[in-house]
Amino acid sequence: MKLDTSPIAAIATAPGRGGIGVVRASGKSLAFLVDALFPGVTLAPRHATYIPFKAADGDILDEGLALYFRGPHSYTGEDVLELQGHGGPVVLQMLLARVLEAGAASGLRLAEPGEFTRRAFLNDKLDLAQAEAVADLIDASTEAAAKSASQSLSGAFSQVVHTLVDGTINLRMLVEATLDFPEEEIDFLEKSNARGQLAGIIESLENVFRQAAQGALLREGLNVVLVGQPNVGKSSLLNALAGAEVAIVTPIAGTTRDKVSETIQIEGIPLNIIDTAGIRAVSEEIDVVERIGIERTWGEVGKADVILHLLDANLGPSAADEAIVAAFPPNVPVVRIWNKIDLSGHKPSKDESSDAVHLYLSAHEKLGIDLLRAELLRIAGWQQTGESLYLARERHLIALRAAREHLELARQHAMQDDQLLDLFAEELRLAQDRLSSITGQFTPDDLLGVIFSRFCIGK
Ligand code: GDP
Ligand code: ZN
Image 1 (cartoon, protein in one colour):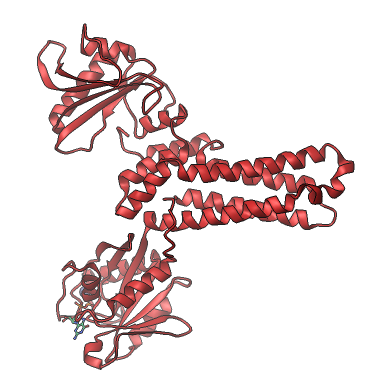
Image 2 (image 1 turned 45 degrees about the horizontal axis):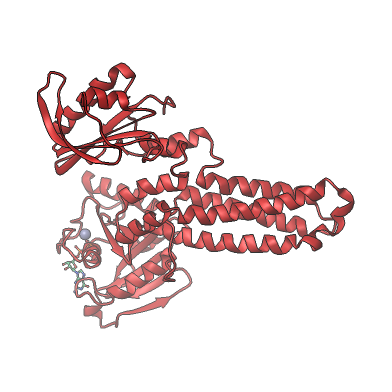
C-alpha cells in the first residue's frame, strides 16, 4: 500500500443496486473539490445539502445529498466529502468518474482497499484493533459476531488492552528505577509488592484472553466434517442440523459425489459443516469421479476442527470404517455418531470411550440432534458466561498468548533468590511490546499493509 497522502475517492457502498449509493472522498483539504463540483456553492460542514451532481459540461448526472466534514472532525481525520446519490452501479460509476476528473489536477486518485480506515488509524481516529473491528463488523455472519465487533469498534477491547499495557509500564518503571541503584535491589521485590502487581496483571490478562478467545469463536466458527460409509446418513444429518434440504438424500449408495457445505449457527457460533463423498476403500471398483470425491474428502478432513464419523447403529463398524479411523489426523476431536437408532432400538444418548465421544441418534427421525449440538458447543470450548466478548482475531490471541508467556518468565525471574531484575525488566518490556501490537502502538509497517489490504475498496 502506498503511503502517499494525496486525496482519494471511491464508491463506499456495496456493489449492486440499492436505494442510496455513496461516493466518498478524503484529503488534507477538499476545498478544491467542492469548488470544482459545486462552483459558487458553500457546503456548511456536517450539513446535508440537496444538490444536483453535474458533469463538467453542466449535464445533470444525478441529484442527492452532499455532506462535507472538515478535518479532523471526520471518519478519516481529514476533510471528507460524501455524495449520496441513487444506488445504481452505472450512476455511481459516473459520479465517481466525475469526482476523479474534478480532482485530477489536485492529485485526487482512486482509494486503495482499506485506505479510508488506514487514514483514520494514522490520524488517531481509531486504533488498530478498532480498525480491524470495522472490517469484522462488515463481515460478521451472525448477530452475536456483529455485537462483539461493535464492542471492539467502540474501543472496549482496546481499553482493556491499554490497562494491561499501563500496568506493565508502571511495573517496568519501578524495576528500572531500582536497576539504577543496585544497592537497593535486594529488597526491591518485597518493598514494592512487584510480585503482587505482576500477579494482578497476569490475572487480568487471563480474563481478557478468555473473552477474546470466546469472541474469536464467533468470528472464526468451527469446521465440521462429516465422514462415513456411503448410505450411513451423512446428508440426512447435515439436513437435520441445518433444518433444510441442502444435501441430496437418496437410498443409493455413493450419491454425494461432491462436497456440500452449509454454514449454520448454534448459539451464534458459525459452523461450517461439510458433507463428504462416501469414503470407500480405493481397491474397490470405483469410477474416476468418485475417486476424486474421495480425495477431496481427505483434503477436508485435514482442515477439520471436529470430525463427525457416522456409523449405522444396526451394523457396527466395518473393515472400511477401521481404515477411515486409522487415517484420521491425530489431535482432531472425533464424535462417533451411531445413526438410525429408530431401527436399532437404542435410545438417544451420549457415551464416552477412550478415543471418542459416542452419540446415538437418528438423523432421519431427528432424535438426539440436540445432543449433537451440545457436543459441538462443548468441543468448540463455548462457555455461556454472559460476559461481553471481544471479536478477537488470531493475531490478537497470538499477541495475548506471547505477552502471557513473557509475564510468566518475569514471574519466574522474580522468584529466584538472587532476583534477576534486569531479566525481569526485559520480560516486562517484551510483554508490553506484544500487547501494544494489538492496538497498533507498536506494529511494523508491513503488518499494517497486510491488515488494511484485506479491506474492500471504499472502506
Ligand atoms: P449418505 O450417503 O451417508 O449421505 O446417506 P443419506 O443421508 O443419503 O441417507 C441414506 C439413506 O438412509 C436414505 O434413504 C435416508 O433416508 C436413510 N436414513 C438416514 N438417516 C436415517 C435414520 O436415522 N433412520 C432411518 N431409518 N433411515 C435413515
Ligand atoms: Zn450423502
